[in-house]
Picture 1: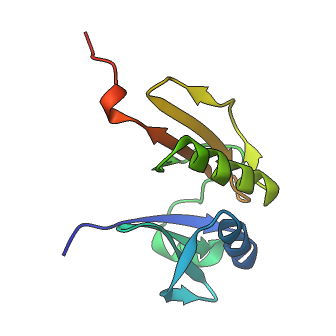
Picture 2: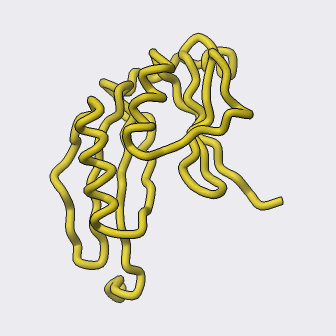
Length: 136
């Protein structure tokens, strides 16, 4: 069995979150979906569990971070092209997300980022590893 990554994110409205990520072109795993949460498929072995806040609280004694005012993490996702970066971020904005920073183009890496409906920070990037400059 290969290693899989499951990010767990608290959301206020599960149906709105599902709709948001569907508009970005993502799909969900029905085996891990019910009225309390859903499994967003990011990649072959990468997933985000979108869990209603009350259900999320059953996994931790700590307070849930208010992602609209504090940064809990940045979920960075690589995609196959610059056009795909633009496609996803444009869809995120159209679906109600908010742009965080200006587009960054380093030549070898192109990135844009946005906040989803709950304020979670997502970075979408394309990287041409053959063009990474040598470190001195």
